[in-house]
Length: 127
Length: 125
Image (tube, rainbow over all chains, first blue to last red; front, side, top):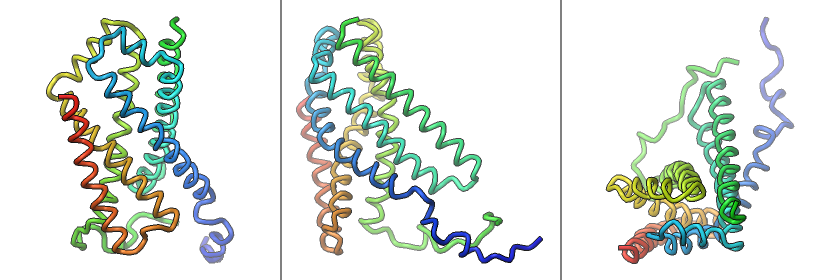
């Protein structure tokens, strides 16, 4: 059966995809946070380069550095999965593969973020 | 509606590369490399949290010539994405949108990426 309704009629009023604006703002907010966190990261890495296990663990276990490390890893994974999602949407044209890849990327980002939080907490709390 | 076999508009290969398009492409490439770097960061944090032996193993990988090369690429990608990201945020605020501003900020990002990467590694070596 042929489709009589004009495609434009189906698209109008729904925006481009429905949720692009939220994604756009989320990427910019996390980018702003990451400006400050990256400055900390570069400073921290110059301190950590060549450090032995004891001093590296003590450095990242301090309340300030542990907080900054957790914030960097969480904001970094969040910002990264938003960016990878757009790249997948742009270049993977088979819908099933596109959705599968996006789900995998988001699941791995969540996994990595939780792993890093627990690793840093272990250092900070000394358990 | 069938979405395969639709005609495509002229794409990358018909254009001479410009600074602006190459830098846009590089921003994405660096973003993907930094995502891989996040995986390595998790491995490093887990090693640090699990003990001295694991920590030395992972640091041994990073001290290997291939590890050092990866770290160098990661450092340059971090500086590039950081600086060019700020350039994007300025564009989003309505600044530097003319050709002159786009090119001047583009060259600034490239020069600062090289300088900061050199300073970082010069300080370490």
